[in-house]
Amino acid sequence: MPSDCISYQESGYFTPLMVDYLNQSATVQSLYNNFPNFEGFRLQIAQKQQSYSIENRTVLVEELKKQYSHLNAPESLKNIELLANKNTFTITTGHQLNLFTGPLYFLYKIITAINLCKELKEQFPEQNFVPIYWMATEDHDFEEINFFNYQGKKIRWNKETSGPVGRLSTEGLDKVYEVFAQEIGQSQNAEQVKKWFEEAYLKHDNLADATRYLAHELFGKYGLVILDADRASLKELFKPYIQKELLEQTTFKQVSQTNQKLKDYLIQVNPREINLFYIEDHLRERIIFENGLYKVNDTELTFTASEILLEVENHPEKFSPNVLLRPLYEEVILPNLCYIGGGGELAYWLQLKSNFESFKVTFPILLLRNSVLLATEKQTKKADALQLSWADLFKKQPELINAKTKEISEFPIDLSIQKDHLKAQFHYLHKLAEKTDTSFSGAVKAQEAKQIKGLEQLEKRLLKAQKRKHQDQLGRIIALQNELFPGKGLQERQTNFSEFYVGNGDELILELMKNLHPLRDTFSIVIL
Image 1 (cartoon, rainbow, N blue to C red):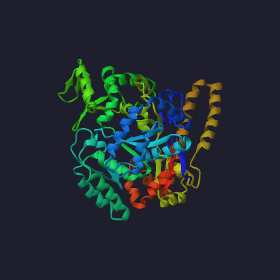
Image 2 (cartoon, rainbow, N blue to C red):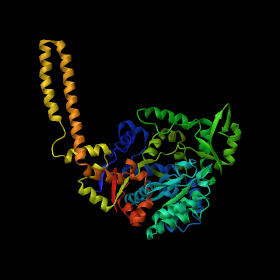
Image 3 (tube, rainbow, N blue to C red):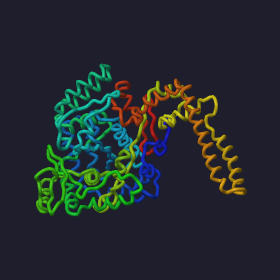
Image 4 (tube, rainbow, N blue to C red):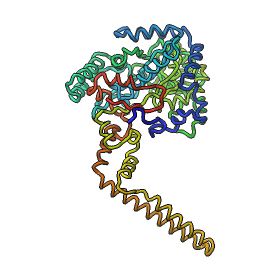
């Protein structure tokens, strides 16, 4: 069973928009800048080098040094120092502050960024490339991030919250730790996992610091730089763009036009007239323009145009971009070449190119993150014994079971030959009806349809009977697929890394680092 088994396009797990993007279809070529290949990166380097200012570099480096002042992070600090150099660029991925990293693809995003930096350094030795994890500290949807799954059980943090999640107190996570510690056991690897949880969430005051600590423990030695952009110094760089958004409603106009080009696809995000929130420690609410006034939704706060511009001037940190404006903020403050995300993320990035052009900001390369299926040696041996390929296992379960039933049946279940014979006989009757009595044609058509349907019903009954006969073997196939695709979906969207770390320790990260190839459009099968 080969390690790279199936392309993203053929996997059945990506939308038509993502498939067309990966295929560089003409219908979507106007929606992106450079494509993620070495020639695309060569062009992107030249464009970003010209557009990104030394002033922004200076502010970024100083802010990152402050954020790393309490971490022992020699490799990350080396990369932060490199960012002062005009020949240094970033490769960025972003993710919510999911409790204990959330699902596995958190790891895959970051490893894609780290490995891409290595590949680019080999290809462009005169430049430096720094992997960035952009923490989504300004998000406020706590229900999306307050849990993770361990062996089918949801470990949840229940808490009343408001405001940006990065500022959220970690109070109450001691109770979550107790539940998790009971579930995970006492092996050496389990003790390491518990230590990470305890150090991250019980010894840091807010969710941003806790997440930074955990991500650094996992990837700091690879030079990952973790950024919290909820900072006044960085928002200061974004002030002109905030003002333009407030006064001209630029994003709404540009994205609405782009959405017309995407009308044949599922639109990921619809723009608002103003794509900014107003934030404080316990507040993140939309800014709405009504009757000549700027209002903060569900509050008494209102501003005239001059007042809100003054507020931006004095307190830019109180303005938070939404999902459609955050990418612009990222590209303004970072010397970034490429954003790495999942299919849903790249779908909304593809809505944004014209908006970047209207703000005169270079649009980055968009790279679909690596996707992975983790399997144990035992599961691989089971698949071999059941004569299953990885491509088989990626099929939807009804399709897989039907195909395997036909394959292992002692006689052919497919009655296509019989249907073809029947159609040939009725072709003669149709010709006969045309020559003798055309009113007879209707009866011939009806009889043909009835007999074809009869054969189809026989085919279904044969298939059902064979499924019963081979239920033991088919049951083993179903059980294996359910292990690898929990909830009949991708493992990477369900399972937490701790489930594999307990059994494999540091081998988990090492195997992922070795097997993830950022510029290949294929699922990686990693055997542990």
